[in-house]
Image 1 (spheres, rainbow, N blue to C red):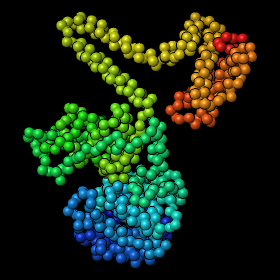
Image 2 (cartoon, one colour):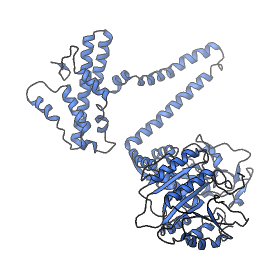
Image 3 (cartoon, rainbow, N blue to C red):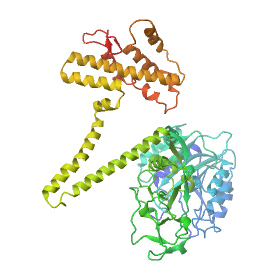
Image 4 (cartoon, helix red, strand yellow):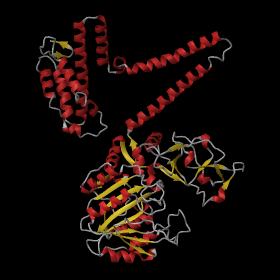
Length: 599
């Protein structure tokens, strides 16, 4: 098939046919108009009936007439309106299809229409696109949205095309099917997937999903925005503590448009010139590239200048970019600089904390943030970015982030000390001096690493980090085992296990009491303590923990409540098996233990 042909790819044609066959059966008519160059954007498949208008002004009237005869595929020109064509990139620019679609009305309650347009109309948050979607929603229900790249030869392979199936508005809005395909996808798999999706009443498939809880009219229909997986992951973000929007933490820094603000362009040698940062200057590794001969320089007003700590992101994310937004934090060595319109620059607000800044920067690099911002077009909008939901750290997470930052700084300091010491191996006057320095000064570094490595050893962690009642008995167990006395070691192991359960059960009881949630397992413990008999044993403490694990009231406490960590202690089968083995003696007799003493 020649490159200049306007015919769609075979798989895209078949998907259109499948959509009409399921959503609006009947003979489909394709309505197009010739462009000013005398070419049609889309050539209908040979079996399809087609009508071509000499100019786009007659499309709305023809659509009204043809809708009364059966389903219609409308392919309006993708040209800017002559009134705004001289303003490329401006928010107020309108397209020819705006007026055509606004004038289309159903002929009757059974009218069905497919529309082939750029994806921008359906995913953009611009006032123009939002207003047009709302106007369409007054008369039409959106049944299906099909996004595709590389489906029309005349259009660049990275450009996203949307085929949207509309039907006359009903009393109850039906579920909406959304599918996305790329030119690299297997055609047979895509067609089978779409066939399954059209029959589904909910859920998702490999290439698409069903929207049952329909968004308000006018809202963006970006593919990832309403995907069930993304919606679920977004709701799960609250597990970090709480949610807010990026706009509550950051404000946008004005950007310089290299076309509209061309009068500010200058050379590096000019006094007051600052570097103009573009998307390519933001590296995937999280830093800003060094200036080159191809860098741009501007004389920018002060309000455009970046400050240390500002975040700068690539405004364009290509289809082959790795998941996650590409951003960097401006540092002193990167300045003075100003952001271009191919980037988005964000500045922390006065009340934004260092912990929030660290968590936001990490979150923006995740695939989820990328999907929430929207990948149905190449460009990221400032509005969509500032509306992005971001997690907020609670006190425990904020403290952990501070500790991790401090730990990273300490480790980086040690690494630099080691590199400096290794680098001095051949800088001393004599080899003997170099040898002595590496051995003597390296001893402290080696000991730090050895001490840190010990934390990976469970025994060392229990001996040094656990509460004394548990740590003491663990030390005793290790001593008994090293002495080779198996009976004494076995008794020490059982005592350690009982004390661990006892200590943990007491913590669970204290936390439950503080939450005013009674536990029935305390009745047996109280009876033993007041009855003059032996005190509680391993089974009593295990009963407390088992009740805590299944208690509905405790389960309803906030996720960050410390008792949830305790409730999972005996949850695994391995823990249950170990407790059973510990309660049975070598001859199979049941053992009873009380406060570490065998009866």
